[in-house]
Length: 124
Image (cartoon, rainbow, N blue to C red; front, side, top):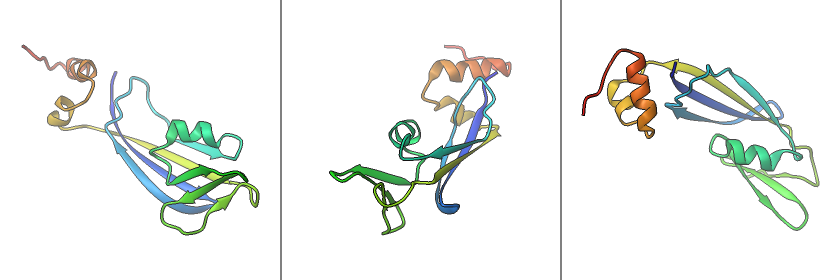
């Protein structure tokens, strides 16, 4: 059964919060569990591709190595000077959306399935 979720992503560096990002309307068939994702220099590129919009930083490749630039800070984290130690905490909460939000959902087939699972029908 499909469900809508509110997602909150909190980025930490050395157990200090860098920032928060929110997403709304993740429609999933499987129940989403809260996640804790550890990000190191080894998996930075892969995790950035997967969670890029949820992370509260950018990173750059330089000749000497990579640097991570948090959004609200002038301090950069340099690969050649310190370990990365970034943790992303993803919290998911189910939501009962308004009908207009369901109708505006970008995947029409999922929106129709969501309504049909709740005994609502759309006639064209």
